[in-house]
Length: 283
Length: 270
Image (cartoon, rainbow over all chains, first blue to last red):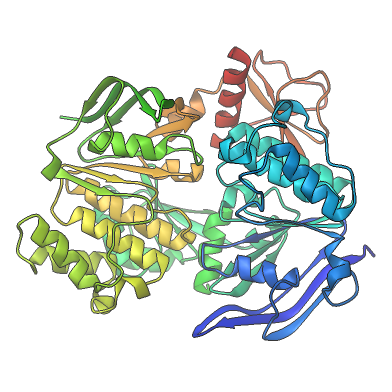
């Protein structure tokens, strides 16, 4: 059995009257990429901060590398926060050297299209390049567990492909990775997913496990706007898609009872986003 | 008439923010401008509504009073109630403070039960729906919303798109920006921006159809330097000339593949 690098058991955190994280249990093993997916405010960042030992849970337990989070565990962790954790008034070299010095390692080399950026102030870099420097800094001490909070936000299509390649390379080399995103289309990059909604883990597993049994009804009404209004008034979730309407997690009967028996409809497998909608609604 | 850009270039602080962008925003339809941070979405919105002037090209827009604009992550007054936010917009446009329109928007947004709550106490999804309702209230000829769905859960995002579809159904020309490529399906016209330039434009379907060559799936990184990008446990390989490496099997490209391939092609051309 592959070793568990991190494990949380039923951890919770309340901020005044907001229960930000509510009893979430996950584990991350060496070599796997776990995606933490959810909207803003779903509790992703709070969960990460507890798992890293930066915030104490009100309830539940965090185990990192077999023990509680401590100064010693920090050496084996790489963390790229949403703000990237770079000093904007230092150059790229100075940032990488600073991080490397903290961990007592050699700074990483700048390769590919990062070559030649060493003397540039981080403040002068476009967001996409800044994110890739932040990623390089987080990886410089070859951490066993890498935590990336929305690593691809603001990165163009090619930069995104390159970042994911580096993430996969790190996992192939044996690191365990926890990555957050609110882009559903990135979630299929992960080996396993945990879907967070209002602080709770509403589903977890591989993409195919999460999609198993999740169905969406697709209707092709003569008047899509009118049909959408009627379905919406009845409280059904409606996604306009091209000329059709897609309704995740509802029954054929419920659609027929609103639009009539002669409306053209088909049942198809849900996309991940549609599955998430159903799961978050508790269907 | 339709609104939009012809060959518009905008500079911000001496740097080119968007370059040679064409844009069509038609009454009764939704145009989505899609791209990451820094792609030029906000510059496009601000130029269309007249807050920025282009260095080159022409902008077609109605008079200011006929434009509804919601900037990114803004547009509601947090210390006013839901109802007061709508009334404020009505008053600013010289309309009755409470009207059938006001009640209708409360109903279609599902915000009726929350009408006396402070906007600052709403969830992100509800607040964003309020912002869209505020833009719709005076029935503008052109509604421009900058990232109305960013950071929202899929359900709230779908509800915001439902409101946008309703606004279009009332005859408004709607432009919405987003960083979610899969929202292209919700719009009748799509412009994908990368680094200030148009990477792809058309309907989601025509953009998918614009893919040239063959897309393949391979378990390993293909040899020989063919353009390839990893997705999960496999590689997507693009063969512009139609001949895939031997270990790759052909697959249907999705929108993400088409946009990634277009970015590759642009990189090669530069």
